[in-house]
Length: 108
Image (cartoon, rainbow, N blue to C red; front, side, top):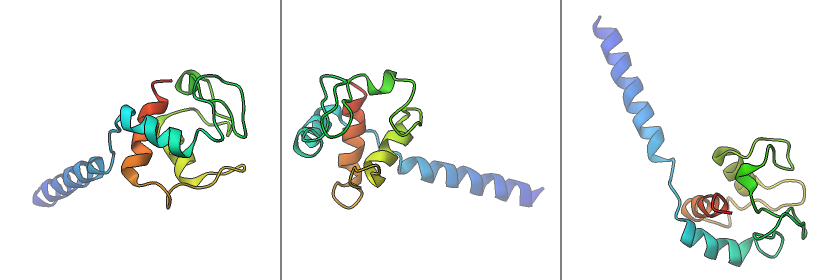
């Protein structure tokens, strides 16, 4: 019985700790980050492609160009890891900046 309680407590702590890393972004700050880093390749006001796809309505789309659903986690991973010609931004933008960009993209 004690072992079960200890494991339950440890699991609760681990879950709470993991949510500390799930940052909520600030869309207003994200617009600035987008304008400075992303707008050279992506339109925010249309779905027309520049170098990369236009991102207007991204979170309303069935899937991204990667074929994945446009969830916060998938969009954040795309920004961090890049791919298909897009550079990875995990070493260029801070965690907060990336979270802010995702929050901004949700407003498009």
